[in-house]
Image (tube, rainbow, N blue to C red; front, side, top):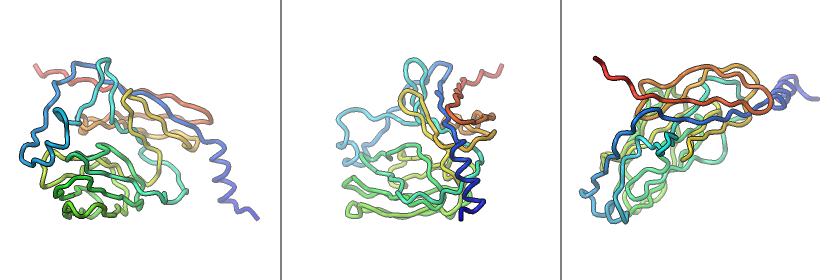
Length: 231
């Protein structure tokens, strides 16, 4: 016998849709900021050329990489993903620089460097963690048990330029834009939702709005604008 809950969930999946779009930046991009890694010889020697800050990645035609798009709330009963999210420390850089995960999902932190790192999370709801990963410790698993209202950062206390941003959600309806500014979120139940487009440099001024999802594809684009100078 199929329960009513199973029937409703199955029906919602049939009615689920995909949200796609592009995130752009309208304005003159600031000059790239070169990272100074000289304090740790292992970090500098891991790169053949200059390494720049990842806080603002915009192409020549304004396409914005590593912007995070997410629904503020949405019905979800699919459980916690079994596959872990992987965060690597490679060349004294966190990879990825921006990512999302579901509350309770495993976070597998790797150390691909032959040097010491210290991983320090800065959540608002969850308990923060702060632990060292010497070069002989290559993997450590942790998690965030509760969802967070907005993205927060994880830093390395040994290398002050190292930072990654994570969004911990109670559903999987989020995405990070690629190098062409594109994102895609699949399997969203039909309905109208509050939506947020977040980018590190605009973290205090994210773009918010609503979107209505039906079966098939829905498109919604976002454009960040450089704040006008105060007169």
